[in-house]
Amino acid sequence: MATRDSQYENQRFLVLRRYRDQPDAFLYGSILDSAAIECFLADENTIRMDWFWSNALGGIKLWVRSADAETASSMLDEDVPEKFDVEGVGEYQQPRCPKCQSLEVSFHGFNKPADYARALLGGSPLHRSLWECDSCGRLWPESSEKPPATLLTSVSSIILIVLTIGNIGAVLLSAMAAVQSVVSR
Image (cartoon, rainbow, N blue to C red; front, side, top):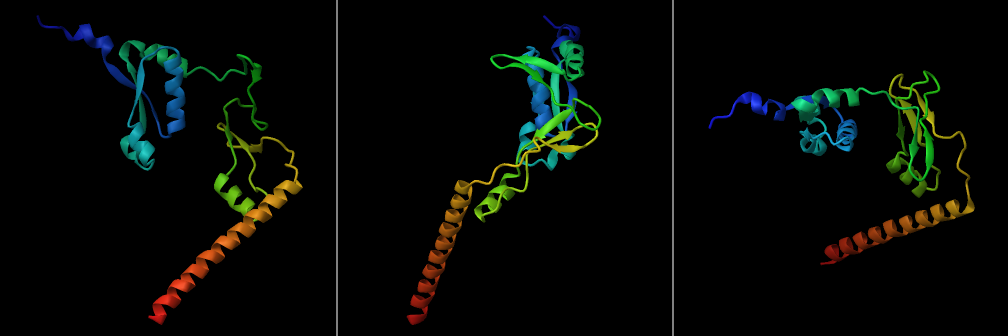
């Protein structure tokens, strides 16, 4: 018995959205997953391995069933809530941009490689955690307070510097001994 195409029309998948970056694709995919709307991301693994391919492949594609497309699209178009309840914590107030009052903000943590290298050399971190407004691009610190400089932090930095210098010295001595043994042969 032959089947008609119309019988399977609602089972077909279509591209609902395209995302250049993984975090956005994963976020919106998880929104649909939490609403029990079947979806999947295409080209995510290729772009995860080398993000430069994102533009060439047309980004990460969010696929949904044709029957769920309208519901999924309306869910993804909803505005960011000002506040919501978090189980076990209470009410969470969404931060706003101090410039344009937008709720479309994201959080950026420390620049770990730069801050760890600076701490290793005895300094304090230059970078602080920042919020960024997705609407106007403004950056502002999470807090205006500076972390206290404690004796323990200073002592641990000095110990790390001494250990690093000791390790470099040991490597240089080993290299000199190897060169000397080769020359004396």
